[in-house]
Image 1: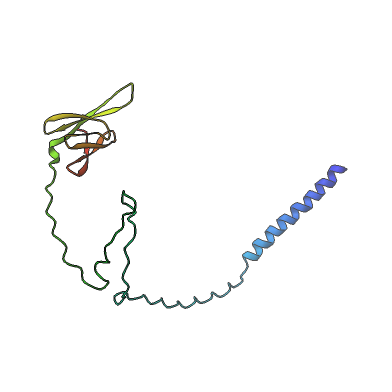
Image 2: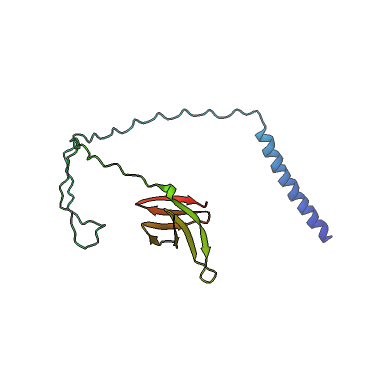
Length: 164
């Protein structure tokens, strides 16, 4: 008897749940008209930008240089050119002579089994050099070792060289 009462109670709950689901589906599929879409609000005008050409404010650059090594260094320069004045012509730079990268070849690497240090073999103008990461020799510095290539710096220019 007790199980039948629980069964009938659960049956009532199931019928109510399915009734709610059926009601919602029926109401959603009805031929009701959608509410009218409201017109978009008119756009506000943009704020007028300030014209800085006629600005007379000069910058005060007498402050400590945050990148200087010594403490207490101050920049005592004036603001240079005032706003609105034309800059003088830039100084012409001498063209740099490029590095002849064909004389530098990455030949491979050797791994020390004890320390796991990788020593890179590089040929510079026919001379064989052995460098670890971060070392310099004959103006050539090994910046990074990446397995199949190395990044080197020579005469202030850096380049990746692939394994030959």
